[in-house]
Length: 458
Image 1 (spheres, helix red, strand yellow):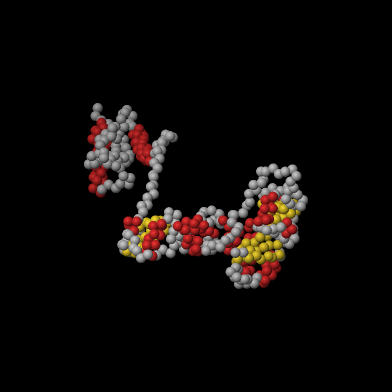
Image 2 (image 1 turned 45 degrees about the horizontal axis):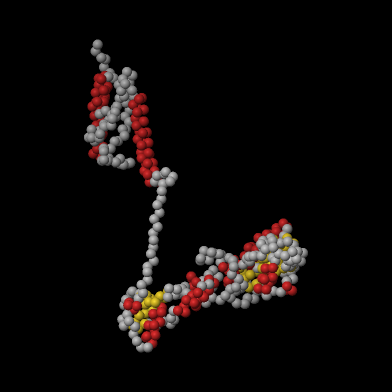
């Protein structure tokens, strides 16, 4: 856990001599005290090169300086004579490069050590490896249910890694604190951030708080009961003093009432009669009186008369008034507009194609275009403005010689009140009528062309 230096903003006296011990933090929340005999000016968070436990050097972060280190030493019951290791210097670039190279080897080393332990069939789990910055020593942290004879394992690891080996057994909670993680509450684990003193947690803490004894929900990532079960235990114990314990069935005039539930902080207890599914809320103080009456051999009145009224929580729905401050309309209107726009574009393209075809079919000396498209008189569709029926077109063809036009399909116009459906199939009867009409029109046109080609009489 990080310690806040609340003395950092205070000015010390001119004759003040800084405390010569500094607290250094290493991997896995490991902290040790080192002597600063050279009076190097250090700030919290700086990297320093310190003396290793068995020679060499190691690199760590400065976690605390000044008078607060003296307080931490008293808290850990460490005297000044017990601090022997020294601070060499501030970490140089070469020191940091060696330190980073050593940290990169830890993951691969841990997996190799696990494989060696499995080959020897040892009931242990190697959870973490901590290399010294100079790569001369490595500490292996493991968890096991009992005592493990790992002498043969140390020999094989020393031959494989060529370094000094130190084996250190830790508990399940210490392992979770070293590895870290996110708890079921959505926050970082307490044991990896600020919790240092691990107290025992029993299932009685869950019973006092009326929690279901589900091991999957009560257990943390370490496999043990969650440490947070002890956080509110004292508050629940104080509230339980006003609530009777060892509650038996209450003897009333309506029969025996069985206890169902207790709200500790509201001091309300619920009871129900046999054959009745409704729960009756009764104050905890009144339950004590009824229990005293039953001990005296008296029956209490019906609990429905003793029931208290619990106000249901009122849910107020907030209404929000939104204003169109941007000047934009709804998205639904834009979607409908885009569909209409596409339909209009398709209609315009068809009309433009028909007008261009009519312009190409114009005859010199005649201002009106020839409309040779067949019409279906049986469909009885309304004619648009500018369109001419089949009889008018037939009269035009009789007036003068005009070339035969290529027949192009005319866009189908639906009657009013009907909607055109894409890919709609017409009945076979209408299709046959259209074919017959086309044949009649073609025969008439051929006859007219044959009569027009004859030389006119002077």
